[in-house]
Length: 252
Ligand SMILES: Cc1cc2nc3c(=O)[nH]c(=O)nc-3n(C[C@H](O)[C@H](O)[C@H](O)COP(=O)(O)O)c2cc1C
Image 1 (cartoon, rainbow, N blue to C red):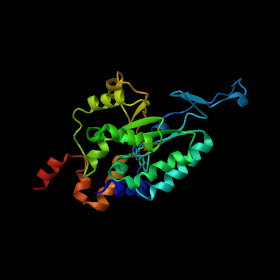
Image 2 (image 1 turned 45 degrees about the vertical axis):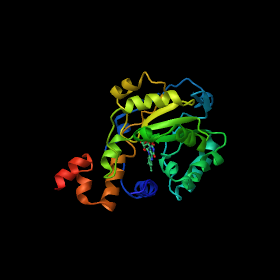
Image 3 (image 1 turned 90 degrees about the vertical axis):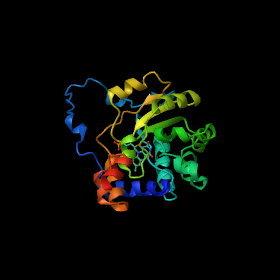
Image 4 (image 1 turned 180 degrees about the horizontal axis):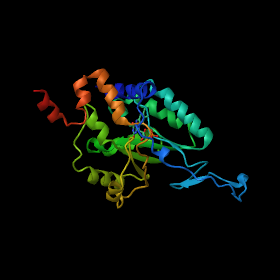
C-alpha cells in the first residue's frame, strides 16, 4: 500500500466513519461556574507566547495531512485559516514527499498560504532510521518550518497490516535528531496520548515541547481498522494489533 494512497484514505475514513475514541475524557470534567467573577471581560486575553512566538490563542491545528495530490487543497484551507486567525499548524507526515518529490507541493502550499504563521514539519519516529541529514533539511525547508514534530505512532503502525513495528533504539534516535536540528522539536502521538512515564523518558532530551493531546478525539487505531476492513480482510482487522510474524503464524 503506497504512503500517498494511505493519506487520502485517512481523510476519507475520518470524514465518513465513527473514528472518535469511545470515551470523551472532557465529559469527565465539570467547570464550576463563577457567579462573582470581579474581572472585566474586555480585558481577558487569550494571547499566548510559545516557543518564542506570539499566538492570538493557545490553539494549534495538529499535524494532519499532505502527501496525496488531493490533500493540497485541505492544507491550503487550513493554512489560510490559521494565517487569518494568528494560530499555529502542523502538516502531516512528510514521508510520502521524501519518496516522491512531485508530492512536495501538497506541503509547500502551507507556507504559501500562511507566510507569517508558526508551521511545524512532521515525520514519524519510525522513519528516523531511514533519514539522511539532507532528508531532514528537505522536510524542514519544504514548509520553512518553525518547529519539527516527531510523531510516536507505534500503536497506529501496529494496527496497519503493512505497519513498521520495530521500535528498538527509538529513544536514542530521537535524541540524536533533536541534537541535529536547529529548530525546536515537538514530540507528539497520534490520538492515544503520551503517558507520564513516557514524558519522563523524554524529559532530558533537547525538546521544544511535548504535545500531550490524548485519547478523546480521533483514534488512529480506529482509522486503521476501517482501512484494514476495506483493503485487507476481516482477519487482519481482528488481529491488527499483532506483529506481522505472529499474524503469519496464526494464519498458517
Ligand atoms: C486525518 C488525520 C490525519 C492525521 N495524520 C497525522 C500525521 O500524518 N502525522 C501526525 O503526527 N499525526 C497525524 N494525525 C494525528 C493528529 O495530529 C492528532 O494527534 C490526533 O488526531 C489527536 O488529536 P485530536 O484528539 O484533536 O483528534 C492525523 C489525524 C487525522 C484526523
